Each structure stands twice: as structure tokens, then as C-alpha cells.
Length: 419
Ligand SMILES: *Cc1c(COP(=O)(O)O)cnc(C)c1O
Image (cartoon, rainbow, N blue to C red; front, side, top):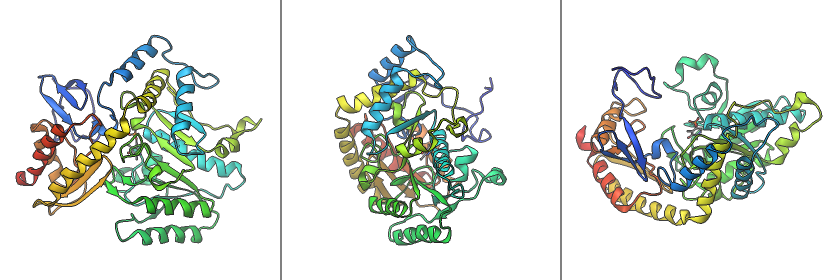
């Protein structure tokens, strides 16, 4: 029987059959036939503490029976208030306002609208240009595609995408060129730049490219010196992936605006938040209704999602999450080191709990023939890994054990032999 479902980022012509999952627990997904699959990519980077963490499940169940949903314009509720207070306390200093939405893309759209609205209401409406990082990814809506890397993913929609200024990725040894490019854009367009948006330390969907905290700090300093809004898209890097709760902590910086989603609810339910400094709120504060922040989605600050987010913050306080991150980071480093010495692998890289390595092939890039072959090889071994072109990355939940990783890297080390 054919399904009416059109799946995301899936070529149905090549992959007609979907893997049917019945349940999940900890670091594993369970198929209908009972076979288990190790979730090596945290189900698209969202699951942090492991699947179906009992406290998160309980929070969702309890809240669902009490207050399911309420319009968030003109209304508020306990879960949203409690979560906002926790977020302000956990985030880098100065991020004192919280705007809720439902996904990473919307968190980024909100950030961009906050920055542009800020300049507009400050009487600098000419500040409209955005600067972005090469290989960046911020989502799949028209706005977030516009500020992301252009390529096969968005070619069909290019007539609708708006122009941005781009700076080169700060690959090792090329940091100065990237910083210089930022300087050059700022001098070439005085008083026209609204904001710089970056994924801190790790550029995820663009290819798991990694750069150092010194460069991140330098971007932030340049923006501050030039009075340009600094937006950190921590949708993927947040909630421990890079070893600290937020990646910006490692650079000792507090962004002007921070986007968070994926791990915000531990991966249990969709929710996003855009945190900003008071000045963005203040710029929209008025007795004039024409100056309000014109943004919402129907489910903004859904109580069930907020209750789960609140429970997630509680887990970060009650459980030794940071110790787990440290242990996972260490185990990942050991395995990556061993793998890097093997034939067929190159460019090993790691940032906290995330590792990535390239498999040597003649055709590189996202559409590399190797990616689907690898995907099926991993699946047939009970492993969920989804290579970006010829780059394989491992981003497991924090419930992952040494045995799990032994198994994963054993399968991975054999990957070049299947080609
Ligand atoms: C995943 C991701 C997004 C988009 O999030 P969605 O929830 O898929 O809309 C935005 N930015 C970054 C850095 C991401 O990794």
C-alpha cells in the first residue's frame, strides 16, 4: 500500500520505503519488527538526554490534562513564565527578553525581524543588510534560505531569495581573511548593516564545519565596535552539543540575540525561543499600535511544549548533565583519533560531543553518490547516521555509552570498504 505522506529531504524515487519506528528509549529507536537502531544523530539533532526521558514524558502528560493550549496574545500561563525565567537565568548575560515560536527557522526569522524592527524604530531604517557566514544554514523558509548557503537545495527558489553579504568560512589558517572580509563589508556599507548572523563554533547542515572560539569572539567584538547587531543561531549548538550549554560561552561572549530550538525540550516536542536584550523590546515599546512586534504563530508558547522545556531546564539542574557531556566528549575524541589514522578517512574534527570526518571519494559535496550508499550500509547495521555528502558526523544523545560508541565506530571504520 502506498502512503499519502511526502517526506522531508527525501527522494522518494530512490527511497520508496521508509523505516517504520514504533517506539524509542534512551539512545535507541525500535522498528516494528523489534530490531533496534542506534540513534547516532539524535533524530536530527534534537534529542539530548535520550529518547523518552521519564521527567519530560511526565511533564507533557501532566500539562496536557490541565491546560492544552491558549492564545498567547494578551494571555500568559505558568509553563511559559517558568521556562522564560529559567532561560534568562541559563543564557549568557543580558538576554533578558524571550520570544517564543515553534521551530529553528521561526526562531531565526524572529531574530532577523527583531534586528530590522529595532533599526527601523530607532530611526535608522537604512540599516537593512545582513552579513552571513559561508556554508551557513538557518532553515528552509524563504527568509532563512536567503541567509543560508546557496546551492542545489534552494536553486529553484532563487528568484525569491533576498541578497545578503557573505564572509568566507574561517577554516584553520584563514581566520584573518574572514575577519578582514567582515571589516571590509562594514567599511563599504557604513550605517547600512543591520546584523551579522552566525552559527557559533559549528556550521551544522552546511557540512559540520568547525571553527574556534577566538574567531567567534573576534566577530562579536567587531560587531560591537561597529554597533551592528550580533545574532547567534544556537538552534543546533545549544543545550550541550559543543560541550557547554551554549556554544557562545566558550568564546566568553553574550550575543545581542540568541536563537534556540532543537534541544530546548530535550527533543520531545517542538518549541523555539528567540532571546534578546531589552533594547530590542524597548524599541517596539510604545502607545502606538503600529510599532508593536508583528509576529506570531498559532501555537506560540504552547503550554505542553513550555512545560517540557521547563522540565528540561530542571534536568540540567538536577542531573549531572555536564559530567555526561564531558565523558561523551572524551569517548568521542578517543574514537575519532583511532579512526583518523585509518586509510580512507580525512579531515577529522570535533567540537564537544560532535565528531565529523570525511570519507575519501572523487565526487564530493551534498549530492555525492556515496551518501545514500553509506546511509543504507549504516541502516543495515542497525545504525542511524545520515552523512552530509562524503562527511560522516556523529552527534549522539548524552545517554550514549562506551559500548554504543564501540559498536558505532566499528561499523563506521568499515565504511570505506563498501564503496
Ligand atoms: C536545524 C537548524 C535550523 C532550523 O530549525 P528547524 O527546527 O528545522 O526549522 C536553524 N538553524 C540551525 C543552525 C539549525 O541547525
